Amino acid sequence: MARAVGVRLAGLIFYGAAVAWAWWQLPQTLPFVVPAAVLGGGVLHVGKGRPWWGLLIFGLVVVVVPVLLWPALGTGTFSDLTDSFSRD
Image (cartoon, rainbow, N blue to C red):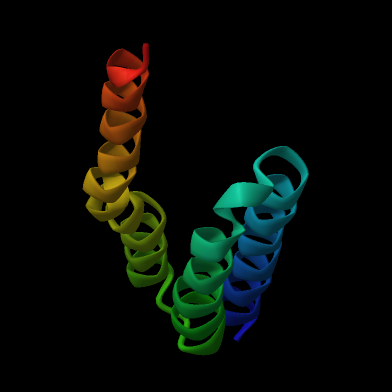
């Protein structure tokens, strides 16, 4: 029983600190960090007591989802670059 409480308390501290750090240092990442902390940290780690699954889901949402959006960011950069060449 004490181990289960410790695992859940560690999850609250870890994912709370991750959200606080993201809010303080990189507020643009909050749309990825907060859902990842709620799903991975809140549901799996704290709620169900599955710390490794929670960490895996947190990492996937924070790392993989933004990587999937990189092509969309690249099109805007490419458009800005080509617009600068076409101006006289």
